[in-house]
Image (cartoon, rainbow, N blue to C red; front, side):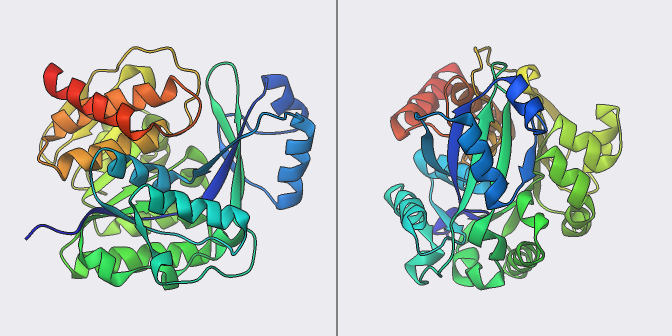
Length: 334
């Protein structure tokens, strides 16, 4: 029997505030380039004030949310568990998810008082993105936000590695994974960011001690997670954590492991202006593909095209028409 949802995701709900900066700005303000760093609201406001740009691009974000949006825009069905506050940013966030056709736990829950989390995305001329994140109320995401019924009705549960940064978020991940395993639902996880692997690697290893069905990461995260510098050795270690995996390699494409064989996916050559959301887009497209009758290689080829398209513009998402056009192009090319 076909499940109601292709993918159930759980992750941080963050409103993205995007600015262009130069590398000197990052150095002057002691910001670690290319990484996600958790900061308090005072530090975040201090940086926004220092940037002093009026043309803020404000968009609903969060890594797993971007992935879930991609699934939906491609024509899939999805559910998202998160935590927002009873404020303007929280309303903005949930309305955007529902308008995208995604069910959330806020169909049954009411937001609490607090501050909705925000991610300051600083984009440099080399298209790299540096994130300083104030989690706000999403730091209190817990097993209370996990929706058991939605998990039972999903093909995959997708876990955002960023959640390992808080005790309650880690508990929510373990709860969602346990429910999936108890109900025969496949599990997928993203390692999210090199800083997460470095600081919370033990928690990620706990989650993959009982193998996940699918693991997403980039090559830097793969090396840190496995403590193997040579990529082929890292792949062998990843096989111990996941039945299958996808490792993105930027302009060198990606490598897929389907449980028995490795497959190289060629990159799509494009002028990158903003790499924010590339990995999220790859994961969402890939999950859509394998839950909609595509092979690993077919899903990987489509994911390569959508992630290339998203880095050619500012912001971590495309619109539905762009996504559907890419599917049609993928079909005609394959």
